[in-house]
Length: 400
View 1 (spheres, rainbow, N blue to C red):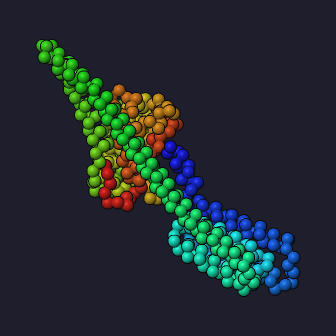
View 2 (spheres, helix red, strand yellow; view 1 turned 90 degrees about the vertical axis):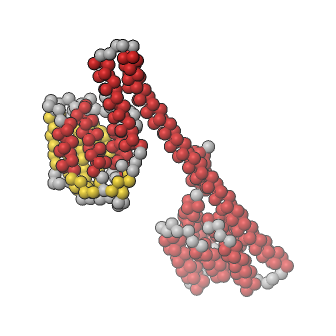
View 3 (cartoon, rainbow, N blue to C red; view 1 turned 120 degrees about the vertical axis):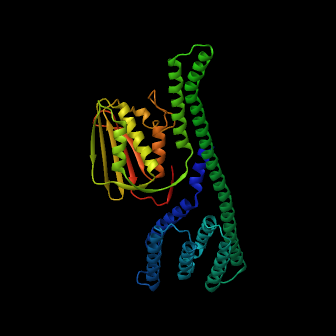
């Protein structure tokens, strides 16, 4: 249903109709000029012929230039009306039936603009055509009937276009409502999935804790049971801490942070003796950010690299123009192609000790900083994460 509505909305979009109208108008004017030149018996030396050429030249150039304007204006349709009127006025006997062409600017003006002022335009056209007709032909009873039918067609063209405009507006509002509901359903679906995943992640450590407590109640006290309770309790605490950081943003003022200093501290904290770290840091990359947020980003990425690396990690940090670039690579097993999109989802993890929220937190913070994060394959053989962050933020506060 939503797909059909979007498809229909694309067809009925007023901007698309307006552009197509202008394109067809331009093509028609060019072909009509050639039609006049090669099918009518107009003397090339006649002054009227030169007037035709001048009229068509001005009209074709003007319609071509309007192709580059996206603004919907009634002046576009007035241009067509003036052109048709000028043709009829220059040679009434040859072009009097071109009055039927008035229907097109009236219809499309009312369809696209949807203003009742177009009705006034239709009345003016009727009066103008009647006056030209009066100047060039006798007002017999048959001619009066013909004029009446022309005038009636102008009015009908306005009402048809106007009511279609209103109908299309209702259709577009309906499409917009469907899209909003679809987005709401996606949000609810995501919330339900995260809630279910959180319950699943909590169930395992809580089951271990409850089982250990039950054994202790039965008199089986041992340091091993206390160790299980302590370990699983720490896992629950870490999981809840990450979840709160991920799901409960709060506004925190930003400050200037030296990424070189922050990164050095994080590397020291996560350092493992069997892993060699190669750091390539250029200059003194300073960005406007929240220190806690950026520490969370760098710490999660560095910790992730140390957890998966076999013997080597490569870190690059530099600034170019208004952006800071951070890259971290490892020689671990890497990330499967089918997992590259999923690794940033909450609770998706391949690690037994991870909460599955680290990379989700990283992506949320990076996006809120108007930055970007991507993952690929490293020349070292493992994973490669690239983060791009602007040096300055437009807003004083960000969510972290």
